[in-house]
Figure 1 (tube, rainbow, N blue to C red):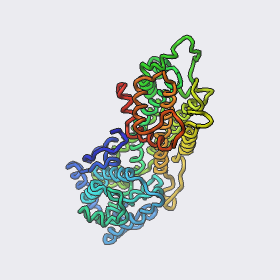
Figure 2: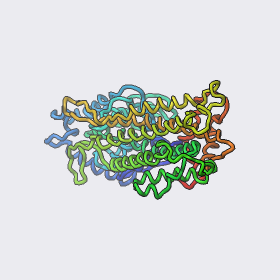
Figure 3: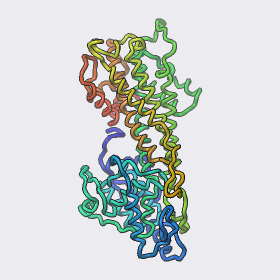
Figure 4: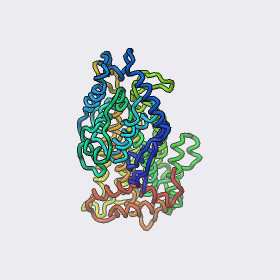
Length: 521
């Protein structure tokens, strides 16, 4: 099964250190259970002692004995502090709009629990254990699209999760059924938490939503950029282009690592192609291919390097303990601004730019196949009987519609800021918004590449009796198991596009290509 598909559940142990991308994906997407290490439990208990020692201090401590945000000047007496924390969560669970995907909610709960496990937040051990139990039971709080400004953390999304662990609000069970949190907790033997000093803040003051979506996007883009190399190679092959431009020594002249990897992948997919060799003759007058063919490694490679830059940012954030105030290792409780999502928001926006550009180039290669003036001897629109049949004409329209949308989604969210909390929070990151639009863009990229693969596969088949290389032949066979998309009279096209997309996201396309090559880079 492929890297974007369902996998059997496992257990991820959360310690005081960072989670990996693969661990986040395992819990968020594949339903892995979680537990806390003994070291994490000891550190949680130790920092809780620090908070409890401050509870009766005559000096005000933010979030322990004061209100929040612009209301931080009020000292809250001890009898009202449980209500203070409960009111914080209820009032901040103010999201609206469509439900957020299950994998995103699980990712943000997991990453919040990972920060709790560092011992820097001061929550009680039973609170951290309740989060682990909810994740392991497959209970997913209902979280909404709108509510986070990406500063003071993803407040509203995290509050909806905290509310559920308190036994309030709607949740979805593992099978997708909606029920109330109190019933779901009871049926799974989980005791609802009653928040004590500092805990409400600790559960909602994090960048976990935007980080979770960044981690999932990095995982998916590492896969999809390999697919982009495969689809580009098949387009070059089917359009009778040259693979000479992908030679390794040409790419050492411009030593970007992603570019070299992409060129090597394209060369591997085209290796020993009879179709390529058929026009390696003096009669071939084409000196250079169009940019969408020739420059694929430069664009795909730049995208790859951007993903790895984003991964370095994600790794730093995964190693972070984001909360305010924070319990320092030497036992101080200090206010800070680490909840500001700017570092994550910037790379979310950067990824939306490169994803749009990779898709834009793939759409141009598709269009070359369909244009009789540029496809070197293939029928217009790869139609069986042009005029009677439209072939893949409208599949390109569908690509174009998605690419146009992706260009709009590439407009950065992180340059926007609307002040909040009576000007206390006067500059915000909008990182959650950047993450939401990136998810739509990543999904669209998979669909754009699926249409390029369908087009290249049909174009290659129409070259018969010429045959492609082993990798392209294997990919075409894999597509055939999901589609009915070979040459022939027009038929209902949407199911073939969906089938090709399934072959992309399940990993079937990549596995097929790699059956004829070494593992792609």
